[in-house]
Structure formats: structure tokens, C-alpha cells
Length: 57
Image 1 (cartoon, rainbow, N blue to C red):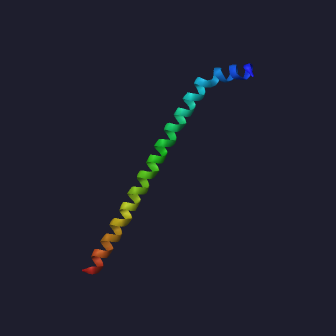
Image 2: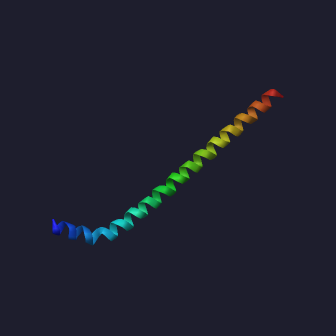
Image 3: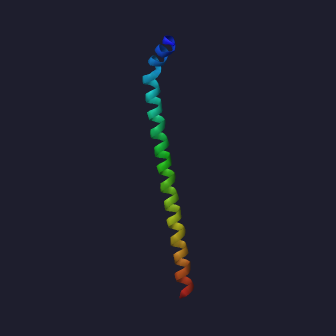
């Protein structure tokens, strides 16, 4: 058990750096996807509004 704890202790700083990097990458990707989805929905709503306004004239 002590050997396993010592080996994990050697790798712990590296694991923290890796996990933080992955978390940052995933967060930025999720934010980019959310921004794209919101922009796409906004464009869709704008097109629908234009069609509705054009059909009433």
C-alpha cells in the first residue's frame, strides 16, 4: 500500500496539470458550442420573423 501511495504521489502534480488542462479545453469547447447554438437559433428566428413580416404585406 505504501508503494502505491508513493507512486501516486510522484504522479499527482502531473495528473493535476493534465486534468486542469482538459477541464479548460472542455469548458472552452462547450462555451463555443453553446455560442454557436444561440447564434444559429437567433438567425433562425430572424429568418422566420422576416417571412412573417413579408407575408403580411
